[in-house]
Length: 266
Length: 266
Picture 1 (cartoon, rainbow over the protein chains, first blue to last red):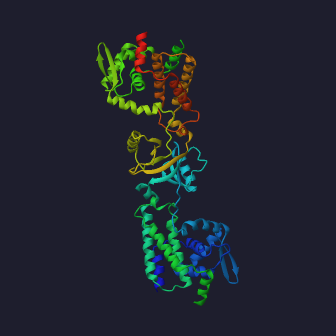
Picture 2 (tube, each protein chain N blue to C red; picture 1 turned 45 degrees about the vertical axis):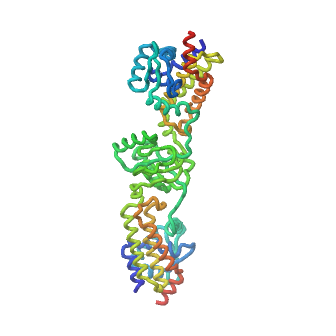
Picture 3 (tube, rainbow over the protein chains, first blue to last red; picture 1 turned 180 degrees about the vertical axis):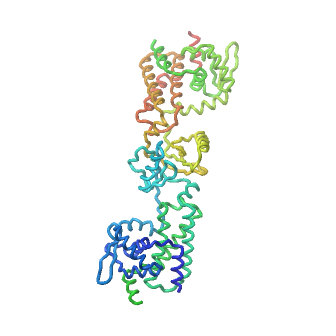
């Protein structure tokens, strides 16, 4: 009962697109090369969150078509695993998702463009965003680390921010995202309270982990990875991050075999 | 003859507004508190450059009215000296004019403004320019030293420039000013060649110094005081500066009394 309440607390506000949930499941439970998840285990995890079998079939079809997942059949059971491309994308996001602290580069650089028209600036914005730059003003971008050797016709300025104003903090962390962080922190606290010190089955540990990682991933990947000084002082990000890691540690990570064995017992 | 040729070389391209020339004379020869220049010495220096007595009267009248100069009468001779205000302004410019090298701060800071309309930006531009900032892009300013503690709603970023692009160099040193530097360097070289190793009278030393300092002042005060890396590579500033200081050293600085005694001999 207490586990059900914890699952509801985490699932109620979550936007759970099935294919995205499956991506999170593989990222958390089967990211290692060659790691597989049997179809029944996938279905048990998503079913526990209320995903219908038909939605699962559609999502798995789509993920195979997009070269995220592949599968092999063993008797009547399909075993799913990430493709090389899927695994690479999963690994890229993993650093941000599981990091216990934000990026804290000591050096930064600003790039300042010369006079350009709107179209040129949009193009430049796109090119620099793809390289991880943050637009701090029209024609001015912030990037981590030292300035690259080749910056074209831009002024490159190396150093560190001495003061980050409110308007920039609000641009980097819009109010809607800040609110989402606070709500997720509340959900995590509700889940922690509901769980108490109860023993949790391997399946439910997997389910809870997936909901936690999925909710966190949807927050953390929606803003640039910057030290806390770049975000509003009212932002609950650090608290939310502590709750995420505390609860993941409390649950521990079940192996796919443990979850599978758990199903067989039911 | 050779001194005349040197004077012509330096005077030919010079824009010699009489009041401005007098400001240069006091800055070079009589900047010390209480230092005076007798009217006949002033007239001899400016006369040697071709300034008419009537133009001198008008200029001296204007400078007195503007509280730059004051005078006292001793018999039939007026003695002129800088007012406190005139001396203060002269001292301010002196650092730039006589510096043997450009400013070389190791630390700089950029200020980046948030979204603002055209009128706000113009106001901000004016306020920051008055405090010595250089606009490097709309809404982005460069200042020497560490960022001030209070920067209002601006992003402050401390460090150093890693790459200065051509468009910024050309903004800081427009082609017309770059050309003026090159022409003044040519004039200095012509003057040096014309002088050779000849002995120069105290009056002519004063006249030549005034032309050199005047020409140099009109260049150096027309752009911000920045390390050479901020200016076009083709800029002849460093060479021009060396020529200025070489020629000033070669001439030495005559005292007003020496120039005065020189007149008495004529």
